[in-house]
Length: 243
Ligand SMILES: [Zn+2]
Image (cartoon, rainbow, N blue to C red; front, side, top):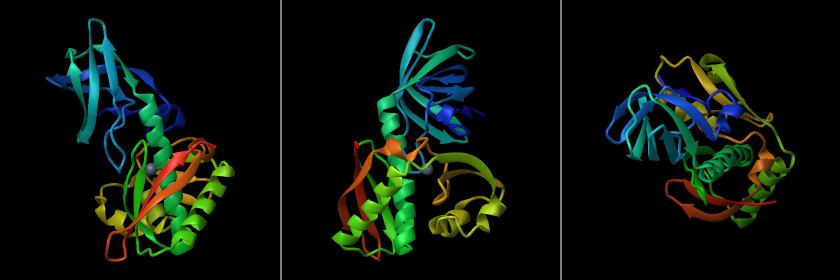
């Protein structure tokens, strides 16, 4: 099984370059003993970047996980046992980290003010969107959400990565309601522990994505679009601005 460096620490999440050993190699696909590349999932796109080794190099164009983590490459093909150096396209990944962390924060604030569940999201490096249900709001209410989100960012709340027992989470009323309703049903009963992301004491959310260390890194959230998706579902789109 490939060790995912971002999973258990902020240091791992902020790893831009790493060494790893090739465990399997097929034309256009490489598997490693460990990786800092994020695979597509949870609304967050896969990382891009490159791998280099003595005598060869390849561009990483996609990363996917289905039982095993496969790096899709273009270029040379390394042999099994080769030690490679991987390097992530950091600008793109860091944008995803900021966007993804803001998604947790916006979801928490909308849940706090309006009681709505997050029923979908798509992270991008320029803009991201979240679908809420049920939610019906006007422009002044969007501004209220935006102000509250940016107030929390100004407080620079710290973000923690931890592992929690599923039974403790299922019985915890602090867990965001979208998680207590939809997500649990999708998890196989064999999953007993979950990786959890805390934002200060305002949000607890099971998630395997990449997040920043503290809210101030995000900058400022600005909502750019609101779209009614029918059956009480509302899609909010946002971008991030520097302080
Ligand atoms: Zn997340």
